[in-house]
Image (cartoon, rainbow, N blue to C red; front, side, top):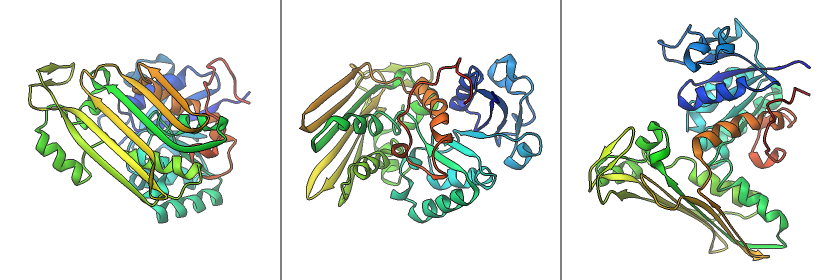
Length: 338
């Protein structure tokens, strides 16, 4: 069978890991990458990943440069958390009618903050035959897709409570930085209030849940407080003294019919004890599910990105939601393209 030609947009830590995973798939052929870093442009992907089978694939500075050399079927995008920025970045792929799987957090439910742009992009995708979807661990699975799957056995759903506790000491440097590790708590709180800190895509996850359940959101309330280190914490990337921020406690509440129907609670900080993901659904029947240890974010994000490709390719053209695609599942690396 013909292999899917895959290119990677964004060659940071997650992008490089997605390339490594894609390279193991019998159904995929990695044909190139895109990055704005001039130090990477022109290099072989083998030099960046250590995967020798990628020796013939090169880094390009733009879609135009990539398309002048190869013609991919699928773009894996890991370059932004902003829906607006992402849809601008992948415009070239949409113009060519390609499938784009992205880890952009705001793209989980783009109509929440960028309705006009989302509508325009959806129309353009339908015109060119392109397909675009965002996926990931959170958002993309733990606090939206997974609880929605659980409601498949519900006769009634009255409310959903979602809790995620993450030991950020085990995560990559950009995430430890994003949650304010080592920053002054007051300064971090000020950044959150101006939209420059906190976990991206939180409100979009909540909006996706409400949308899928047919609940009309009257309001969304979001708060974020820094978690302050009680003692010195040393990770591979940060040395955080007592009194400085070591993470976040972020909450989001969706009001429907005057009542809090969806409540999301995220605690992500260095050395957090008892990491877990919990889902409590009040309804008929009540459901109470806990994933002890939680879903390991970095590995799982890469897996979600690659695993969704076959589901995306059989979906109708358009700017798609995860809830509009077939149920995500593991992509057996030995399986060939259909």
